[in-house]
Image (tube, rainbow, N blue to C red; front, side, top):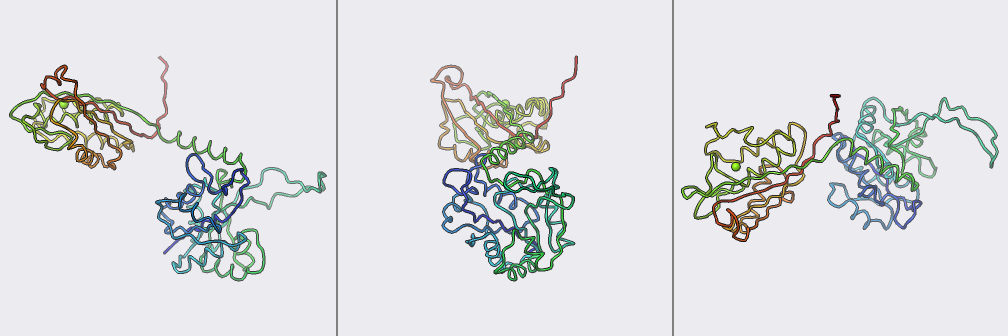
Length: 394
Ligand code: MG
C-alpha cells in the first residue's frame, strides 16, 4: 500500500444556510463530498480513500457516495484534530506509506495538485500546499488599525497536506490534549520538517454561499471548455430479397426474406454508422467503404460501425447515446430488441443503457407498408474534445 487519502468530512456546519452540513450540499448536481472523494479515487497515485464523517451522518454519507469504492467511513470526534486521529487509526491496518489529509469542503482539488504533494513526499516527511499572500495585512483592534503585518514569510495553507503515515500517526498521538490548527502544525510540534509546494487558487474551501456559486461557475467553465456535444443523423433503406438472410443490428433474424445489398445489408447498423460519422462530420459510409469495392462484398456490417467508432476514439471522443428506429411491417422487432441493444452496445463498447432501439410500421403506406423493404433511422449523440472555431477572413 503506497498512498491513502484521508478526507475529513466530520463537520456539522450549516453556515451556507439550509439544514444539510455543507459537505453534503449539491455542487452542480453532485454532493460536495462526492466531488472531493471522486478527485482522489480517480487519481492514479491514490490507492485507498478513507472518509471521516460526523456522528449521525451515516445515512447522508451512504446516499452521497453510493456506488463509490471506499473503505467504510469512520466517525470523527469533537474537533478536526480528533477526527483526523480517528481516520489515521482506521487506516492503520492498511499501513500506507503516505497519507494525504484533505478537507471535504475543498471540492475543486485537481490532479496536478495531488501529484505535486505525492512527488514532494518522495523526499520530505511532510508537505504543505500553499499560496502566497498578495494583499497587505493589517493588524486591527475593533475597527481600528493598530499595525501592519509583514507578509514576506506568510503563505495561505491548503490541503491535501501530505505525510509519512507512521510519522504523522505518531505526531497525532503526541498531540492528544493539545490543540493545533491543522496537521502541519501537529507535524511541526513533533519535530517533522515540512516542505511547501504550490497550492491552487481553485482549491478553496467552500464555506459560504458565495463559495458554492464560485465553485459551480468554475466547474461549468471547465466542463464547457474541455468537451462539446455533437449530434448526427443516419438514414438507410434496403429492399427485400428472397434469397438472403435478414441481418439487423448484427443479429440474424428469422424471417421469410432478407435484404438485398452489397454487404450483409444490415440497414440498422448502416443507419447507426452514418449517424456516428455524421456527428463527427466525417462523410458517410459510402465515402469510407465504396460499394464498388469488392472487399466489402457480403461482409458483416459491424466492421463499418467499428471503423466509425475507431475514428471517434482517435479523436478522443465517446458515444453518449444512440437512438435507432427500424421501420417495417415485418418481422416483429420487439422480441429481438434487447439482444439488438446488447449487440450494438458491445460493438460500440458502451453499456446497453446508452442504446435505444425502437420499431414502427408505416400503417401499410409507402414502400415499407407494401413490405418491399426496411428503412432505419438513427441519431447519435457524441462527445468530442472542444475544438476552437478559427475563422479565416474571405
Ligand atoms: Mg445501406
